[in-house]
Image (cartoon, rainbow, N blue to C red):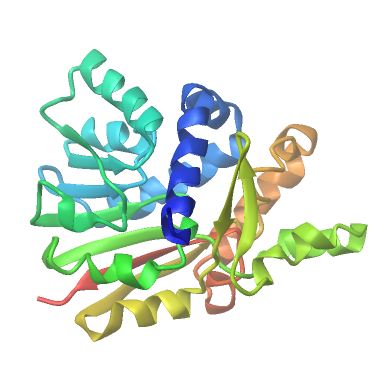
Length: 271
């Protein structure tokens, strides 16, 4: 009989495998996701150099892996959803990137099974690691995979999102306070249910411990609305443009690092 962790992993993998065929289309049509992805790429580009190696967790269909491979980065792309990896594998073959991208099906809870080590960087985008309540164990497994002086960049969802809290004014208390629920909040995707867990930057920083130093923490989606409000930029283009400008000014401030739809945290392994 499967335990709770195995059930969670099975459901998450099944949900994202089911969405894999339309994942890129969803991403491309959502202007907010495109803006967020560009901000994340800009952030990590300050730390990654041509020829270095990156371990990507929750690589999905490889949107980021392919982008960085084309910039000269070597990416070992991992995911536990077979459907996602199938899409990624096809891309790698079709655009001749096998010399820059390697693909392996692997859970982030079983990184000891990786067929590679000695990475310059580790990367996980868009809350993939919010699908576990064992983030501390995942982070602990990074140490032996990462070169001294290497960085880890995680994009995670914190417990407080101003845009969601404002939904309480419309009576939507379920969404407004879901991130604050003890033990995580139930999520639903492609007919599968699983738990989503939320982490503050301070809590994540403690998980890394004294063997790492903080490089950067920034909010992502502080003033800009969450991606599920995808019509906002179309219906309110001027307001959206203004919110992007505000976000660029305040996302690095202490109070807004943990008060956003996501946050980006980069830690450096001490030499």
